[in-house]
Image (cartoon, rainbow, N blue to C red):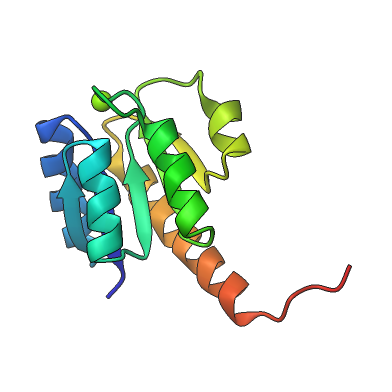
Length: 129
Ligand SMILES: [Mg+2]
């Protein structure tokens, strides 16, 4: 069972994602802010992180930067109410960027595709230049 970590300061979002993604067959842990997310990712390494951007204290882009620094292969999906950080998120190595909506099926779909892509990357031999 793939393990997901949800990092979002909004308790309702954490609850909704926990429900939806557990139903979709994932094991889900969550954290309410950036530092707690980084700690959770280190103590109990997930297969994929779903990350909010606007959070008090450490924002999601900084969390993304730190996660990719220590685990470059860890897939991270940004899940945010705002579309404006797409380029910056991509530059920092985000594996996907979804604008929050009530359609959580799109998120579950993106989680599934990103995990499949990540395991394909791990199992296929490195491409020669
Ligand atoms: Mg937020």
